[in-house]
Amino acid sequence: MTCYLVGRIAIHDRERYGRYAAAFLPVLKAHGGRLLASEETPEALEGEWDGRKLVLLAFEDRAAALRWAESPEYRAIAEDRIAGSDAIVVLAEGFG
Image (cartoon, rainbow, N blue to C red; front, side, top):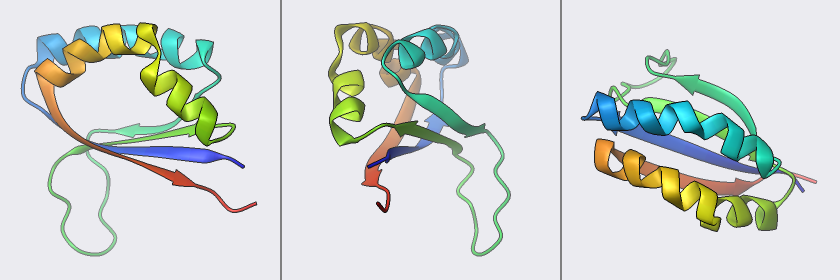
């Protein structure tokens, strides 16, 4: 069952976050992940958006998402994301 990761990211150090972003796609693809959306200014249709970047990823299943998130390759580049931003990341399983 497809599993999604949704991130809301407040970037406060563009240089560090930029290094992370430059290395992100090859690591994601190597683990079977797909980038579905990455938007710094998403359009709010209801309510007020808090100005954070929105990221939506998809994986084959929950186990694949966790393997990617916990992989040494991702953890290495995530150091720059953690230093350069504040993030809320949630995992949600899709419907079968």
